[in-house]
Amino acid sequence: MPLVTEPTRAVQVLSAPLVIEYPFKRTTGPVVGAFLTGLRERILLGTRASDGRVIVPPAESDPVTGDDLTELVEVGPGGEVTTWAWVHHPHPKHPLDRPFAWALVRLDGADTAMLHVVDAGTVDAMRTGMRVEPRWRDEREGAIGDLACFTPEQG
Amino acid sequence: MGKDRVAVVGIGQTEHQATRGDVSMAGLVREAAARALADAEVSWADIDAVVIGKAPDFFEGVMMPELYLADALGASGKPLFRVHTAGSVGGSTSIVAAQLVQAGIHERVLTVAFEKQSESEAMWALSMPIPFQPPLHAGAGGYFAPHIRSYIRRAQAPDHIGILVALKDRTNALRNPHAHLHEHDITFHSIKDSLMLWDPIRYAETCPSSDGACAMVLASEAVGDEAAAAGRTPAWVHGTAMRSEPTMSADRDTVLPLGGAQCAAEVYRQAGITDPRRQVDCAEIYVPFSWFEPMWLENLGFAEPGQGWRLVEDGATALDGDLPVNMSGGVLSSNPIGASGMLRFAEAAMQVRGAAGEHQVDGARLAVGHAYGGGSQFFAMWVVGADKP
Image: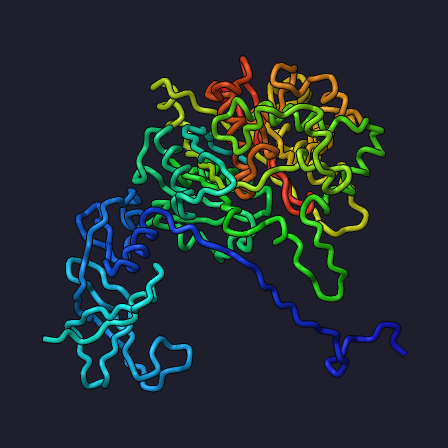
């Protein structure tokens, strides 16, 4: 008869759920705050980097040199799709309830592309290099969702 | 084991406040870092590596913030390390940065520590319910109050000692423009009459909740010599030590933690200190609740066990005493948790550089910086001097 018994997988070990819910908030600062405030006013902003490039969404500090970036530059509203992926069957939590594209959009005047949504109707309407323009929400609050999506440029 | 010498050539800190609503987390760390770089007269490009520390990520709810802060810290193309040892992290982050120089790996290391407590409520983040245990909801003060009661009983210390410490630290803070609290009307009686939060800890004997950051540029001996030659006096690192112990071990002594005593013994050994009370000119130690000053005076060998409170009562730890403690106003006057340990280390360095402004101790040549964290579980210390070790 062993004095010590080995734990066995057959034994039901006690477990309990641990759900942690906790309130946080974010302070945006002068650069990201300006970008978000701009969205509310239907203005798209980037920052000019040390090498002259315009970064959108704006960076607070230069990704190469680490310097402060303080010069805000208005960009867009139109832009160009640099790459994209089509969503055939949107999930309920996706931004649109119909097939759409996740796309990188380089706004006019910007040197970097921003991830957003293109509402093009069908996958056949999508192509790299296509021109797009923003569709704004009517009710805007200073958040990335104020820019509902991009649509193929009319014209 | 051979170590290269380390010089503190740049120090910067933010204006600590309850809410720094004007800056993002990135903006907060940059404010301190940019000031440290300016103090060292170097640019982002001159930095070889970045070591960042902060207290638990849950305090702001950004997991691994060092990822998001890499560009804000000018870390592109450079090594970036994150350190975490709870409340002592500002101290241990400084030590990890110093070791990169001691090891001869890097010439100039930027080290930064921060907390933006206003993004949430850290005190209660420390009190999460745990399954199968009764909920405590006591915060840090509730955790430490029994340790303090135990100290008072063992040392037979009079009740007013905690009040004297709070009055001293908050009065010192009036001389420190960076301090969060500037309580011009504070008196012994205003502290005594403040709300008893966790007996014996009163509201006015408790650290505030602050947004803030601290940064230092730690450099090689050659860089330190250049700074000295240019009239920018460096602080020289004479010793660094970290020790840990288990939080929940039933037989550990939370009044005189063994880890803290071992940490002090090691850092004094490195610095050649045999009589800390006589040899150390001033000390900046981690006192988040007033009674921890006499407790840590004993743990760090400045007083015999049970005698630390007498140094407080005699005024030895006042700014004009023979062992000034917490000249900056201490954690009791500014508490951006992750940065609090580094602020202690930085204040010690500022003192021996003669750069502490209105809270300068005349003739300070050798100073101790101290931090502790967890449930009095992690300890970090350094000794810095005006002279080379």
